[in-house]
Length: 322
Image 1 (cartoon, rainbow, N blue to C red):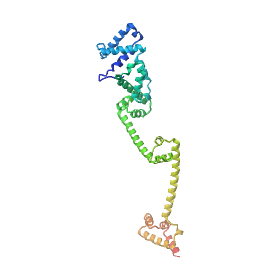
Image 2: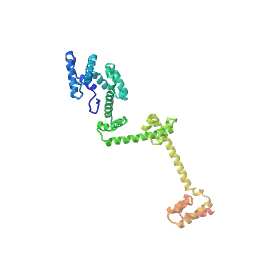
Image 3: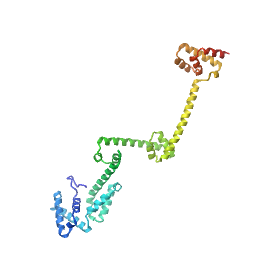
Image 4: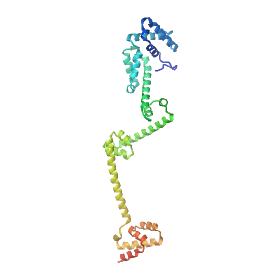
């Protein structure tokens, strides 16, 4: 419950109502009523409220007792029941929840609508909300409870105490969430670039930019089927791309190898053989010969003969000369 000041005491009206709640029916009978009032006043005096010797405070106690007798039950019975019935969604906005609580109970206990009580009721509702948040967090698995309380902007010291974790653990989860926020911002920017396009194009665009499936489904607002379809389409495109690349590589390799022996014109054959002989005079190392022949654009078929059967060059030369 809320406290009224730096002394840590509850507000007087709340302490009065809590004391009244403890009374039994026999304490409210005509002959026992005044004794009960004096008993409560004494309890409040002992708690530091100065009721017995303070006219205004004593009058507040008597009014509360009169209201309870008129209604037939203590205000705190209704108040505690209303607080206990609150669910997390009811206290999402503590101020709205407080307004409703005061309005509902105030229909039976009009003094409960007093403006001086509103801050105390707000504090109680906020404490109830915090208790509900912590209870929900404790029911979540792994780090989800920590994440939940961080998202609800619960104070760090409250989180560590309530969930019995270290500050280092809290910082670790905070860091992970910050990375997620950065990633979400990146994905939002990526989606802006494909705004107005089909779901398939959006999913493909996100996949190409290394976005996780989970985030694609959430932020692009598509289902798993759309993701699977996009993956299949991309796999088909990738296979076709690989096929074309392989064909291009083969064509490039063939072009680099040059024509087959039978396709080399005689005059070019003679020029190539002469060039090979000059290269072989410079080096007898196969690797060096091949490199220099390639630099001279000599067909690979002819180079293979030069390094494996150099004597055959004479035969090819005679054939080219006719």
